[in-house]
Figure (cartoon, rainbow, N blue to C red):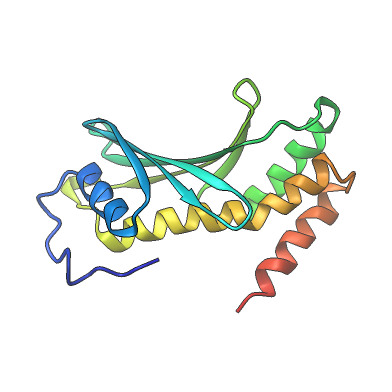
Length: 168
């Protein structure tokens, strides 16, 4: 992820979604401003493309991020998938995974609280999008191993953890 501190030195007057749009343009991500308070974009990872949506809620002063990708596991693998999701969530302090069965989507969610008039900064936007993608990349193999590889959730999560610790 790029650092644009000099380019965006004062973000205090920017609506959080305006800031996200500016960051997306800087990274050359495909995006669609779906409303005043929402933007959706596509970010390429190593394993797949991720759909990333950020939405601003004035009511609770939270910038919500939802990062998802399609996944259609066999019905009989769902209990193992839910178990490995719980294990992944135990390791993910900044957000959490869910599997939306009806939409056939794996989802990672995060909320950046900007209460009391706090303003989002470029570094925060870069960090939350990067964390979403990196977390998806980290656990994608574990999800695949339990759903299609017949691996036990504890074995699959160990592989994800070893991969994370193996990168410098």
